[in-house]
Length: 248
Length: 321
Ligand SMILES: Cc1cc2nc3c(=O)[nH]c(=O)nc-3n(C[C@H](O)[C@H](O)[C@H](O)COP(=O)(O)OP(=O)(O)OC[C@H]3O[C@@H](n4cnc5c(N)ncnc54)[C@H](O)[C@@H]3O)c2cc1C
Ligand SMILES: Nc1ncnc2c1ncn2[C@@H]1O[C@H](COP(=O)(O)O)[C@@H](O)[C@H]1O
Image (cartoon, rainbow over all chains, first blue to last red; front, side, top):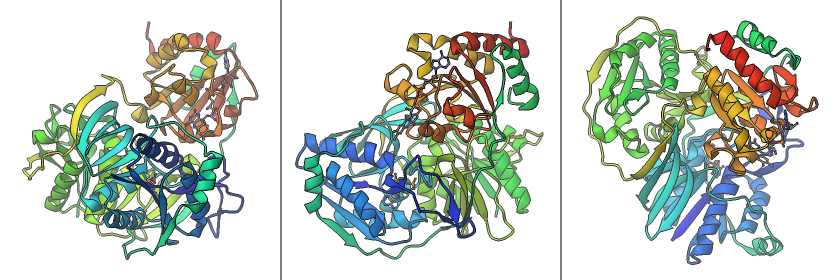
C-alpha cells in the first residue's frame, strides 16, 4: 500500500497581505510560511495514523515548487512519512500545471491513495485534487471528513451541500481532506531528528500547459467603520439593517 | 459559442445557488453577444422551462436516473458530452460542494481554464479576466483564462438572481452514462434547511453562549430572520454544535449578505471564514473585542439580554406574531 500526500505552502493566517510591483505580486517580506492547514492537519496526519495502524504502508509527501519549500517539507517529515519528493519549479500559479506535475509523480509511483487538502487558504482553488483525479482517470472524493482503509477498499464520509454522506470505493482513489479526518499534531524531538535524514528527492517538472494567468490583485475596500447602537435601543439596529443596509 | 450553466439539483429540485449562476451566465451571454443555456443532470420534479425566467433559452435535460446522485467522475464525463453537443465556450457553476467536485475535473478534461469562486462578471475588453477571492477574503485576484473554453464557478451571494418572464425550451438529451465507481452507503441530509454556504443571512454563536443549552436564543433569532446558523470553532470542537456549522479558516468560508455574530471574539482565523459577508453585526459584552473592527454595526452588551429583544424587534418588522 502506497500513499501520496500533497502539500503546499501558504502564508500564515495572521499574515498581513499586501502586494508589490503595481499589485501584480505578493509582498513576501515579513510573511511567515506554513504548510497549508488542510494538508497538514487533515491529509498528512490522517495518512500518518493509517501508517501507524498498518506499518507496511509506504507514505510519500509531495510538494511542487521551489527550494524555499524545503523547510516546510522537513517539518512535514518531522510529523511522519518515509520520504518526500519536490517537483522543482517556480511556476506555481496555475492549478492545472501543478496538477499535471502531481499526476506525473503519481503515475511513476503507483500510489493507491492520493490525498490533498480541501483547498489552499491562499489561492482558495479547491481544484487540484479534482484535476489530478481526472488526469489519472480515478474516482475523486472531495471534502472528505473521514477515511478508513479496509484492504483495497476505502470507506469515507464526505460533505455534500446540506449534509454528509458515507462512501465506499475501491482503490486507487484521490481524496481531498477537511476537518474531522484527524487532529492537529506537533512534531516531537525524535520526529525532528529523524526528518533530517529522510530522503527529499528533487525532480524536474514535466511539460504542461498553463490554463490561467494571475494578472493582478486588489485589496478589499476598507470598512467604513462600525456604527455602534446602544444596548437599550435594539429596535434601532433592526431599523438600520432594514432601511440603511437593506439586508433584512 | 453559448454560455452553458450547470443547474445543480438535489432531490429533484433546483438549488438556490443555481439561480444566481443562471442570472450570472445570462449576463455573460448578453455581454458577449451569445445565448445562455442550462444543463440539468438527473430526474427532476421542478418545471425546467421556468429556468427561462433567469435568461436561459434552452435547458438540456439528461434525465438518466444514474445521475440522480453526484459521482464526480460520472458527472464530468456526462457534462463534457453536453458541452460538446451544445458547443458552449463558457461554462458556469455555482461555487458549492458539487462544483468543487466536478468543475476541476472538467477543467482538466477539456483543458479549459477555471476560476473557482468568482465574485464579479468577466472583463472581456482584453481577453477574459475574472475577479475572485484569494487569501481567505483578505484580497481579490484578477485571473485571465487563456483557453478556448472557460469555466467559472460563482461564489454564493456574489451575483443577484433576477427572475424575468421567459420560458426555456427543454431539450431531452441522451448521452452515455457510466456506472459510478463510488458507492453511497448512507446519506444524512439536514432536511428543508438552506445550506449554510448558500444562506443570505447567517446567525452565529461563539463561546459567549456558555453552553449548548443556551442555543435557543440563537435559533429563535435565526428563525425570525430566515437565517442559517453557524458557530465558532471552539463551539464545534466542544460538540455544542454540529461540525458543519463551524465557520472560519478551518471550517466553512461563507459570504452571506448579513452575518450576525453573538458572543464571538473575532479572532483572525474566524474572520477568514466570514469577512466576505456584505454586512456584519457584532454583539459582544466586551467593547474591546476585535470583531468590532471588522463589523458594520455593533452593540456592546450581554447577548442573553439583547438577543431575545432583537428577535422580538425582527418579528415586529416582519409582521410575525
Ligand atoms: C490555526 C488556527 C485555526 C483556527 N481556525 C478557526 C476557525 O476556522 N474558526 C474559528 O472560529 N476559530 C478558529 N481558530 C480559533 C480562534 O483563534 C479563536 O480561538 C476562536 O475563534 C474563538 O472562538 P470564540 O470567539 O467563540 O471564543 P472566545 O475567544 O472565547 O470569545 C468569546 C467572546 O464572547 C464574549 N462574551 C462572553 N459572554 C458574553 C455575553 N454574555 N454577552 C456577550 N458577549 C459575551 C466575550 O467577550 C468574547 O469576546 C483557529 C485557531 C488557530 C490557531
Ligand atoms: N504546489 C503544490 N504542491 C503540492 N500540492 C499542492 C500544491 N498546491 C496545492 N496542492 C494540493 O492541492 C490541494 C488543493 O489546492 P488548491 O486547488 O490550490 O486549493 C492543496 O490542499 C494541496 O494538498
